[in-house]
Length: 329
Image (cartoon, rainbow, N blue to C red):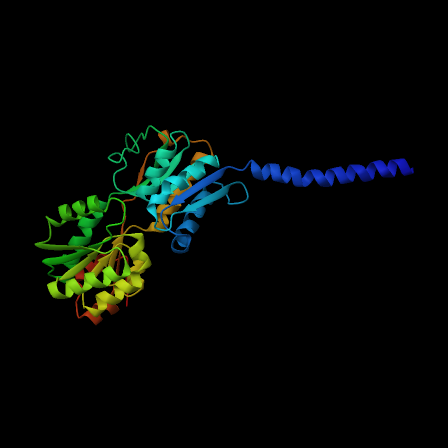
């Protein structure tokens, strides 16, 4: 081989080596990007992000292999969600995966073109997100739970589990989006089951302590803790106060019962996020949100902690125990 031929082959090899990173970068840049928008924080939502990615995998998409995820977390600062949604629009994401009512509304306000797969509690038709459950008709669809029915069931479970619970205290976070409307729903549900409903707000650690001090003076038979990301972050404080004041309580998440709470009744959030991920994958494959029916998760999990029941000196009725999905002993 002549020197000229060797030089030409060497240059060809160099050119090829330089082209490979460029090709890889071009392939990476061409990957669709999912804009993940949430009012929560990555620390608390890590298990649900895993469930979301699992749903994406079921649809054939693997993070950093054939799709990318752009996360935007408000960390409880809900007023920042519109700006975060605008950032994702500027990134030209292929689809929004928005969880929580305020995040979904922010995404919907930011774009009428980019598909939105939502995860919310409440009626998406009433919220103006879709025109119907079976035919959403716009750029949004997703997964929902109807919170009024679940709150009504929690109140009924408290009464049935304890044998008597004529007076029930309710603690809620007034800073949570649409808190006033949620309390109206709770009051509406309580009319059917409760004689005396005592509602008190708590939006920080000090106000949680103050709320339980009020409960001690009022002496309710039981407590309903309305679901809220802030309360979930403070679950150990809330569970400890319920134990200190010997107050049987029901929560929306199993996390509270695992931390020593008495009962929880609510949806399996991991399953909700898995379904959201699967729907997001369908859109990445080319499905239109307008053609994907809104999914309604109908099953809720009942978890009971018998160790806590014994510590509180209460006996859970056999009828409620028989319906429990999990009993901690």
